[in-house]
Image (cartoon, rainbow, N blue to C red; front, side, top):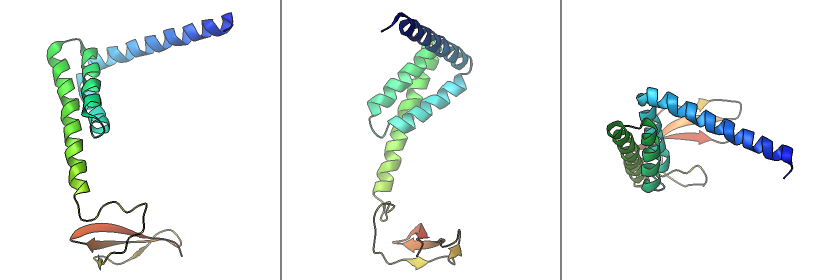
Length: 140
């Protein structure tokens, strides 16, 4: 690595550290934003690995620096992760799963008239196995 490149690398690392310190300062002054960030992290990470959601909550809670609010932030992340897992489990058990990437052959009842959208496209609300579904009709 050339001396100029090494200096640029050190400067970028220093700038990134300063940016993270500023972000931590803002978040510690606005705990509601920190709580919201924990909920979002829990929703995104929880279904894949609840441990990652807990880790993200703990890291976000560490920004506060006070044990009580930090625990609440960590619990928000874990709770959101559990809620996301429960929601995905409920969707997976539904009679009509996502069919966006495959062709299906189902009997459906038309609930609303077919609506023309963009040229060559149409949509309709149908009932399949008692569940309301938006049907998107392809171009012909």
